[in-house]
Image (tube, rainbow, N blue to C red; front, side, top):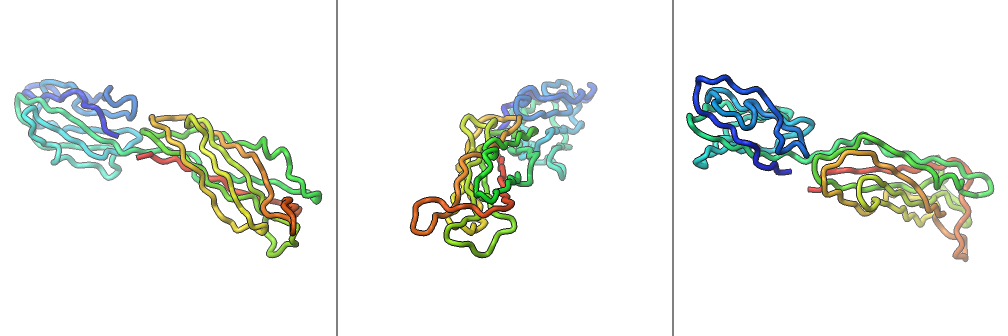
Length: 257
């Protein structure tokens, strides 16, 4: 994410008091950035360091150019956490300096572990219709730049799984998961297990792009449950084995560039 040009820092003499720190309005819509002396200051002592701080973000690079085009920012030092950049180099008198910077794109992820979907199939082999009403709403997602959201999932599978089944049985159930609230179109994934025993395969859906920085909640819903496998000599689906089933769904949110 490239910042717009921030207001200039002017150095004109040693007889003035250094300005206090302040936030940059040029970057406030994306990342909060502050500078000491504040952006737009005049009469700043040339021996005073320039300190730029990014909040909840990491600085990628800072450029500081004098009004004659001379670059002095190369002498700046980035802190270990990449949140603060300091220039201790003495600046010139009667010179205007322009600061530009880049912040690393980043996303805050409140849910790092997979979501777990559980159900029980009764002896009649029927899938619980209430499964189609299962959803999770997770607050606290945020990205300071354009982002990409995707879903991956493993089919529902008998837990623990059997090592063998009769030809008319199945212990794997496919489904579709969708994530809404982050992009215009939902991110979706549909599992596609064909082996009635189940293979533990993880399926990944097509990612959706959010072109602007965003904060908010993401809701994940499941639907369209189908039994993996077919009865012997028939196109009909197999009957699921009774017992406890579980599946996992993972939401992945990353900067898109």
